[in-house]
Amino acid sequence: MCEKDSRIKFTDKEREAAINLYLEGCGFRRIARIMSKIFGKTYRYQTIVNWIKTAGLKVL
Image 1: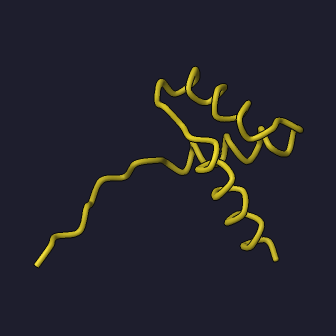
Image 2: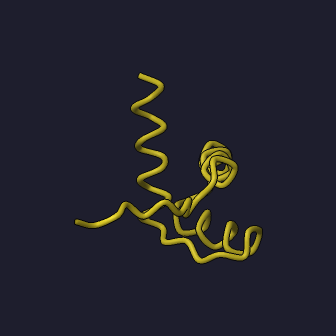
């Protein structure tokens, strides 16, 4: 039996920042680079894409 990984990898603040940058017209790779400089973590652009898709589905 495996235990669930209880770490929080990304905060809501990080996701919100990515969505705001997207709404300002930044591309996914640019958002990943900007966020890496702001938060000091490495972000993959595909992670940003997934966040934006998920946010879009919640709005509908």
